[in-house]
Every structure is written in C-alpha cells, then in structure tokens.
Image (cartoon, rainbow, N blue to C red; front, top):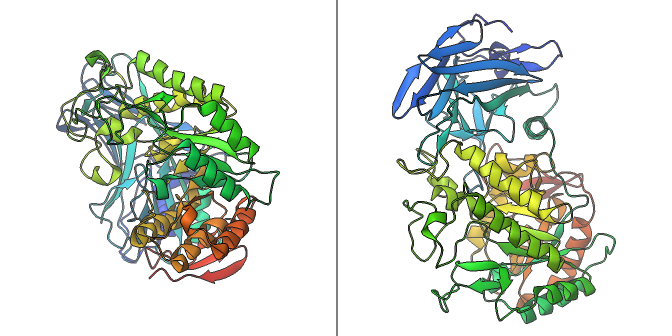
Length: 556
C-alpha cells in the first residue's frame, strides 16, 4: 500500500468523492483506508505527533505505531515498552460536504438520543460513523472485538479515529508486547442501496463471525410490572398465563426471571439491594432447578438475570475494584475483573445455572461496574482519571473482552446469553443477544417511546449482523394506555428482532391476550428486517416498512 497524495475538496464535494479520496481499491477488490496524514499518540496527558518512516511505520522516541493490511481492513498496531499509552489518533485531511448528515453508534446501550446529525464537529461517534449527503453513503468503522475503545470524529477539514488504550483511568503498560489496537474498515453504498441497507451491510462487514440464535427469540420477563418484587409463585402464574397464548410450539418462548431471585446480602435487609449471591436463590424462590422444570412443563424455556461483578458485602478487600466516582457506594462493592479468582467465581455462577437447566442468562451492569459511568456520561472519557485495576498491562477493551469471553465459555453451547449494559462492539460475536437500549417502562409511556422506539430504529441495522438486537420489553401494565403499548408491541413483533413482554396479570384482558397471541406467532418465525423509513428526519420514526408493507405509528 502506498501513501496517497490528497487534493483539497470544495464544500459541495459528494460523499462518493469523499469516500474515494480516503480509500483505495485493494488487490482483492475491497475498499481500504488510505494511510492517514497524521498519527498521534497520547502518553499521560501529553499528545505527541509520530514521524512516518518506512511507508506505514510511525514513531516518536520509543512509541511506535504500525499499519498493515489485514484482509479488507487496515490494522493498527502500537507499542510503547517503557511509557504508558493512553491513546492513538489517526487523522485524514478532508473537507466535509455542507449537505452531509452523520450517524454514529453508542458505547454500550443507547439512551434515546441516536439520530442523523447535521453538525459533526466536536461529536464523538463510537465505533463507526455513516456519512450521507443525499448523493452517496460512506461508512467508516472498526471491526468488532477490537482491543481499544474507538470513536470517530468528523470535522470541517478532517476525519479522525481515536483508539483509547487506557487501563482503568491511566495509560496501559504494554511492556514488550505489541498491541493490535484495531482493524479499520470502510465501505461505500452500492448503486441503488439506501442508507439503512448500507448501514446493515456495513455492520455485517464489521463483524465477520456473529453469534446468532438458531431461531428467533421471544418470550416474557417480569421486570416491568414486578420491578424486583417477584417470587417463584408469581413467575409460575405469569408463565402459565402467557404460555396459553403460544401457538408455535416448535420454537418455544423464554420465561426470563429478572432481578429479585438471588440471595440478598445481610447488610441490605428489605431494600432489594444489588449485593446478591448469584449462585443461590432466596427464600421467595428456594429451588431454582424445580422452578426451571415447571417453566419447561408449561411450554416455555427458563432464563434468569444476574450481575456478574457484584461483590458480597463482606468481600475481601483484595478482590475489590478501586473506589471511584460512581463506584464508591459501600453497599455496592464491585469485583475487580482482572483478578482470576473473580473470573472463576463468575464461571461458578454459570455452572449453577447449567445444573438448574436454564437456557438463557441475561447479565447486566458490567460497563457501569467497570467504568463507574453509564454510556451517556462518557463524553470526555471512558472513566474518571487516575486509577487502575490490579492488572495494568491490559487495556480496558481487553479487560472487558476477557470478562465477556469468560462468560461465554462458562455459559457453554446450551445457554443463550443476553448482554445488558455491555459494550456493543465488544459484545458482537460473543453473545447471542444484546439489550441495545436503556430501560423501557411499565409506568411511563414517554420513557418507552424514547428508549424503545429510538433504540430500535437506529440499532436495528445491527440485528443478526452483530447479534440479535433486544429493544427491551413491552411493559404491558395498567399504568400505560393500551393504545400506546399496542403499537410498541406491533413494532417489536414485526421488526424481525426479539420480542419480550412484561405482562402484568391485571392488565391482560381479552383484547391484550389476543394481540399478544398474534405477536408471539409473528415473533416466533423468521421475518424480514423492519426498516424505519423516516429515520433521517426524526429521532422517533413513525413510518416503518414491516413485512413488505408501510405501517404508520402515532408515538405522540
């Protein structure tokens, strides 16, 4: 690969010209990113510009960055034997078309704020960015499973890729090893291909080996009417009620037991605290194996919720993650994921689930428990500065991947895993499902509309490309008007993505049961991927293509 000489573009340059300027055609016919105009590295608080040499090698003192072709991607490799390495930045010069719109992703779940933006400067676009100017669509991203936390910046005169290599809140100590930081990938929309189809195809390119459920996933979950106040008796009651509405018995639905089943810490009596032992049920459940067997007899597949990095109230201090803002509540101690003993404990929990015969596990809170922040708070940095885990030789991305892979290994082949509050790009290819947005609600329609509709519209291109995308539940309760939930139920059921329903018994009248029966039948079979037709104009798309027809919704 040879360095390209760039020309200055006018403000009216199309994305097609932009794309061809930043890329070249490899010998295999794939589009490849050109070598960047500038390569920078951050050590501590200092950014230094690396000097190019030998084609695709860049260096400043002992910090080295090398680029090489990896199939259809541009591999980025970094080494810094003596200095901490916080980040690498690649910069390509270009002028942004004045008419362009931009779509990025989120670090983990989305928070009802995804949209096509018209102002790009100063905005972080996690993992990938799609650029469209009414003439063409250009896609820039990194392959899933990357060893750094990546985001794109689109400015008036440049496009940048920042690869965060921190370990905790400080730079990683690589020692003598070379870090394969990321594989940069790009694509242009095909002739006649709309932005949604191009984004979906690009997601498939970013994840070469997704882990997809063998059959469409659907079922029930008790959270949005019980909110932790559940019991074995309530689970059996709602499972029996909803099982009567199942018609496709060759693809049975799941009954997922959410938070409230595990043994509570003695330090937190009566408050439903999170400090639970996730290998043992509490007195409201007693025998999880027996409950799982009863769920199966009713015609559903048992699943449960857990929080992997939750520590016990009397935990040894040597096993805990450092206290940082957001992770300093003494009632919620967190395990350090870089300590092998903690990984072994998490695996032990999954051994129990396998012995009980559960077929789905939904794990939660790992991003928050690692970073002390939700995704929407990661504006300036992944986490607060100045701290590190027990092992400082791995990047945050590597630490997260190690945890995910341990969960995957422990779950085995017979348990589907849903990641909730997991880093999206690192979950792909590891878990079968991902909860792609923040919580919907069984109490507030505005929250379901914001988190549910927006999330599904803008992350549906990831469905069966990264994993099966779980847009969260229909909180079918007496608190939300049926005419609202009926639409959300229809959208989920016909989107081609998983459908989960939290059906409060008191809210399940004959009309609701009839609609759920239809929705279950639809969700149980393979369907065309739903498409938001007005997603470039609104954050809450109301016009959708579902099963070959256009459906208009009223989200007001």
